Length: 178
Ligand code: PRP
Image 1 (cartoon, rainbow, N blue to C red):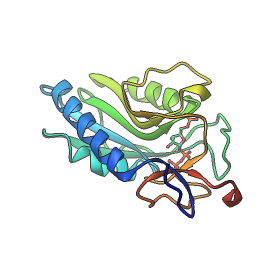
Image 2 (image 1 turned 180 degrees about the vertical axis):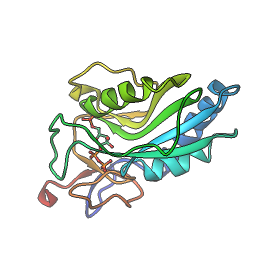
Image 3 (image 1 turned 135 degrees about the vertical axis):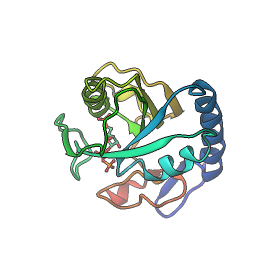
């Protein structure tokens, strides 16, 4: 594993790019006849959303939500609040929620329930990384880029105290930086 000044590389830029191509091809196929709406959960999703959406070879629409769960701490409060909602009705759309990480699952189980109540055709979840070992609630994650161990990670959208999101690789943060 490569070492950088911010930590060890867990998933390299190249691995991310290759996996996103695969996910994009799979989603293109699965949503061939569907009215696809990608819903990104800000802020962590931004890099994944822009890269993945361009690997999906079909007409689609994008929208974003902002929710608060963690604040600047590293452990979940269990409280999810919608700070910015979608700008449209999702009735009849096939919604694919785009996340950087699913950890306890609390955020996604709440958002999925909220969106399902709005009568879309379907709601599925796509995450770049999945920390299955940290689940507090059972939730189906339909598309997973990478299964990862329970390490504190940064980069490619993921932050520590709002920093390091723009790193190109996913890193295990150096303990001295916490
Ligand atoms: C992260 C991530 C998910 C949530 C997942 O967001 O983007 O929304 O945590 O954690 P959970 O499965 O334990 O609920 P965060 O609150 O860190 O905000 P950010 O996207 O702005 O980084």
